[in-house]
Image (cartoon, rainbow, N blue to C red; front, side):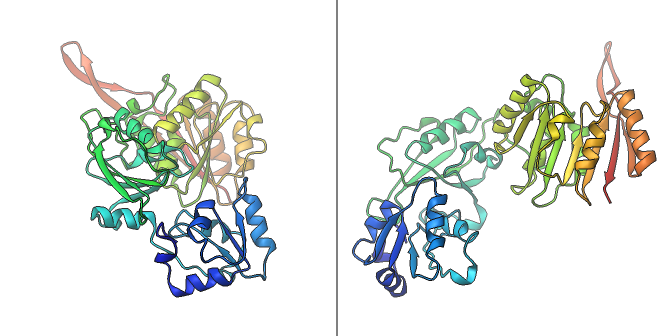
Length: 393
């Protein structure tokens, strides 16, 4: 249902609520539908899994679950469907908050980025911040709009127009607009959506769609796969839907961060032995909008024990140390891919030996950049990189 409660429901929905022996939902939902409910009311428990168990335990009994908007768009319907067969679920969706916001603003919904920040880090908005883009974001509470405006301002998007849409579809509906840098709204309804018309300052931190992001965007101490080599490495890793990457010797985390930026379904684990670098990877992940990156502090191969089975492995640091490559190869699932980069002679020798033993492909990557030579310019070569690519049978 929407914020208009029973008034916005059709005859079927009203009849199902009235005849249900048990009705689950939040306190707000029960208050909206109180005149229709005849059965027992059960509010969601914490942790939420308890309520899921309670719903599943009543299999065979007419149970109604009240939800806001479209329950299969970042809603409880998607959660229940993991436990209840689809043929045992009958859904009557209402308009989603995204649809309502787009209709109020006159935005074609298919042209806007839609993001759920409800119960999630607001850093997830960062990859969508591009000049001219329109974003509709679900929020968590009354404090979220201010936090979002602060993030936009700090990232160089303070001139963006921020539309605050509150209690959409109900009697308390309100739409207000301001510049992110001048956000000053008070008494914000906890049920709100933020829509953003992105305007980038000259120093705005925009994250490009292609791999090989500028090194300067990353916080690092020099231990970073450089931009050009990173682009080639991401191409070799070839991310595909839902895959998990292990980044062994992650350094600044640039490889696994760009891996996760390629698609929201991708997951990654950064393994890094340095305490300082591990903390830096976490900060980089937040600033690039991939806070779900898992960072494991420890030394390979011991730190690999017990980790979820990877689809793809990248070895960028410490691969020449005893047991690392062997442990990675053993952990990789059948059909999985491994890419390793070497800049030292010792690591290169290891990769040549692995290529001789297991096959795959070896590539030599050499990059030169123009640099001053006295009063003129010349090519200054970077350290060459030997890359081994291999797929496990």
